[in-house]
Amino acid sequence: MRVSPLVPGLSRHDLGHFISDILLPRLVAEDGPLVVHGALLPRDTDAVCLVGDSGRGKSTLSAALQKAGWTLHGDDALHLRAEGAEIGARATYPSLRLFSDSLDHLFPDPPADLSPVADYLDKFRLAPDDVGGPAETPRLRAVLLLEGGDGTDAIAARPVTAVTLCMSLLRQSFSLNPADPVAAHERLTAASAVTAAVPGFALSYPREFARLPEVVDLVRSTLDRVGAAAKQEMAARSGLPGDI
Image (cartoon, rainbow, N blue to C red; front, side, top):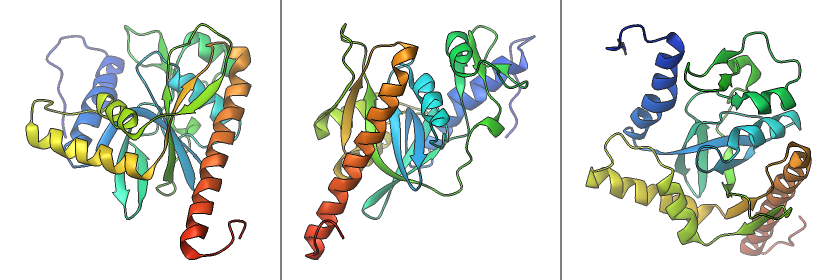
């Protein structure tokens, strides 16, 4: 594919941002999978995704999880596809993009190859080498919907209904032509498959760098609970004790 800008003097940063963050997710969505605005973070072969509006803190929390030992596949867009009874997840490309305040806090000695995401954004892109590569497609185990702060110091992950999760995924999905009814039906079908296989949680926390370790612990414990529940369900279906 060859892309030639029509705007004279468009910088390589602006062009790269348009191709990677705006055009690519919509082109991938045309190929069938559900593509949502979110971050993908595996721990071993199980993964969580962070989904939410721009500015909710997906990239900052993703970087904090990565520094705590998780693998970061991408913080911009990920495609979800049913693979049997499970949901496979993959980032559209390796990405980590941080505003300057998050970069200063999380990377006091930033990599030398930082680059602006775009000339008009106060956001910087870390090189792919600083982001974990997808050795294999991880199994999606939970979707965390990032909410705005509720004005308290509470850090919580509360379960959401399948309807809430489905509508959130659709609202955050990419599409080349949102008015195409066939594509809209396919997105709804794909989102319904995700909600049937994966639980969703509304994640709320104060936007304070000092509290990020607590949020990381909550994400870890949430994934552990989901894994334990899945193990119990599998054991019940097989007639084996849940601790096997």
